[in-house]
Length: 366
Image (cartoon, rainbow, N blue to C red; front, side):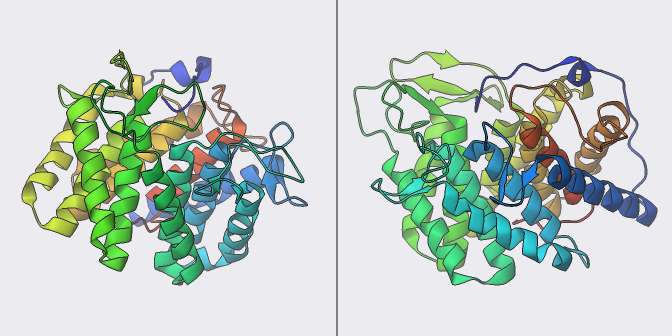
């Protein structure tokens, strides 16, 4: 799991919600929900002077990465996305507040660096999330600097490969550079697969494909059980069997991208089987007990699959969750979604902005 979380009463509500028909009016309504949710994120949680989000005093890089994703989603909306161009540039510029050039290889620290903070431990998934969003923006802007930084982050990810063959299930990207870390996670490997494959699509460089396949084989060989992906394995072989929604999403996306770059239909079949298994496991009630920021990542990857093999069940699940959250979690006066996870409001609000933007047609990388 990315971080230990405690869900509150709002997240445990299990009311069933029927998915509405996908008419043009629904798209307009969802667009309004995306814009108002993002506006609340900026009004209540953004610190314009520093370009950062609220925390202690600033958010960790993990929430910032998801606010970055929400902003890029808004900037990827059809017709209106252009109006968020300045915001996207501001988020990308503010990444410098986490960049630690003193580490080799360099990367984004867990907390803001000097002069605003003291930096922190590098976690590989944080850097993968950021790399994925930089690639996503590169595909829209063709800014060579974004691509170069994403490539730099993939170098960091590869550096995190565990080369100790005495460890249980040898290999895999470790969770973080913390001295006491003993975990290799689905979340530190599957997003790395996606980043490598997207870089391969752009550059054609086999290095990215080869490493993506290596990470893919490891996570499928070590954490895949009964159609779903468990959370992590320690160096001595203990497995956290928790099933989290975002782990299912990134592995679905990995299979779609592997199918695209290799043409092997078996990967697409695995993506579809993974989506079916995840939707069967995550009933509406179970999904509402997941952290919303995990759910947002899961949904983005479902839509990547839906773009190549449409299935009405995918959008129905997303719309059901989005409608429930709007009715039952959102505070009408502020537009804030207080799920009461210990991930904090920045993560929660950014997640909902992502979900509404995705339903409104924000361009994803497929």
